[in-house]
Amino acid sequence: MNRVKIAAGNWKMFGNSVQNAELFNAFHAAAADLGGEVMIFAPFVYIPELLALKKQNNSKVVIGAQNICDQAQGAYTGEISAAMLADIGCSHVLVGHSERRSIYQETNEATAEKYELALNNGLMPILCVGETLEQREAEQTMAVVLSQIDAVAEKVGFETLCDTIIAYEPVWAIGTGKTASPDQAQEVHAAIRAHLRAQVGENAKKTRILYGGSVNASNADELFAMTDIDGGLVGGASLKADGFTVICNAAG
Image (tube, rainbow, N blue to C red):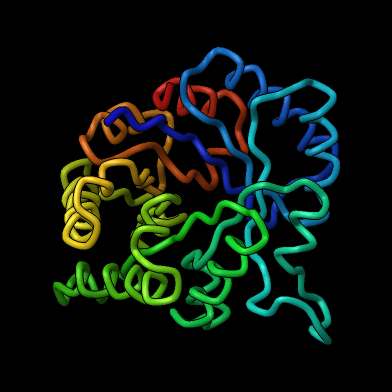
């Protein structure tokens, strides 16, 4: 099964209107020439202006959010709901990013709630999973990653999960400059797909599994050439137009 590769930029808490417009233009130009998909996950406040740029340019670039609340609505000051994102035209959202899990102590259960709310409001969730350095050194990588997947599957079912996107992001490789080798990354991606296949059979072939963890212009080609790596969720390198264009080309 031919899975369309994805180059997704997670801008985290960086950027301003001028910089964002410059980056969007570079992403738009890259997306226009590619067979793959190009995505931007931006801070909430900049999503409307990026959506306006997308419409103005008739762009293929996908605009997504980095997080949502685990509640549908209510007295949750400072939170943003899945329905609100859908209302303004946002289409995708990251769920369970390692920084949400580690810094803000978000549990597997809260992640599963967010995932279900995203689906119920017409958003495509990208489920982020991954292990810490301590967990990898204790040979717990597969147990941790698969438990994070199972928590969501218990909520929505494996068939539904297989219709969305998963991002494997080893926590020890995010923003550290360390990257899992292509073989290390492929090993985990293959294990994720095998786990899905055990539940849903050949439908697991359609699930796109991204790698996130210090992806850059120099390693993207080799990573994306792996059998079960369907593109990248890119952090810091997505804030540099030239470097991210190279990553887009690797995905295309």
